[in-house]
Image 1 (spheres, rainbow, N blue to C red):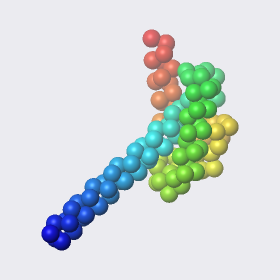
Image 2 (cartoon, rainbow, N blue to C red; image 1 turned 90 degrees about the vertical axis):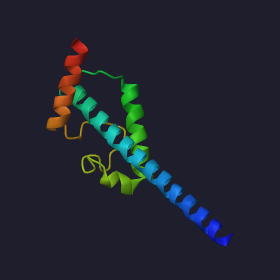
Image 3 (cartoon, one colour; image 1 turned 180 degrees about the vertical axis):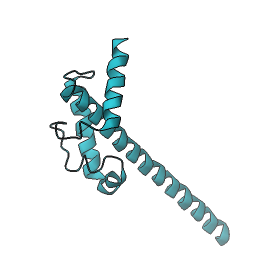
Image 4 (cartoon, helix red, strand yellow; image 1 turned 30 degrees about the vertical axis):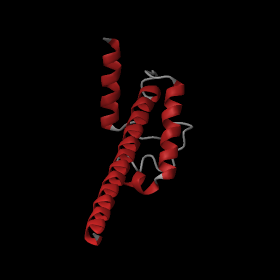
Length: 116
């Protein structure tokens, strides 16, 4: 009986660890997604003098990212673009790496797609 309880506890603990890892992975995915979205739409706004999303949507994403980075600094440091978004607050994307080749290509892709 004792062995069964111990095995059950081990299985439950293992499942809990997997769920926590999945949650942390989802947080990292969201931080990465928001950084890329903010960067690309900042490129569109500052380099191409255009926009695809509203200022309100950009601000919503930026505030969400700022909160995530504050709540999960260790995860945030491991995500792409960590250095570019260090100290980021939701006020502006002007100081981001607006010449980043990936972001510029994605911005052009979105602008061209919108024209169709």
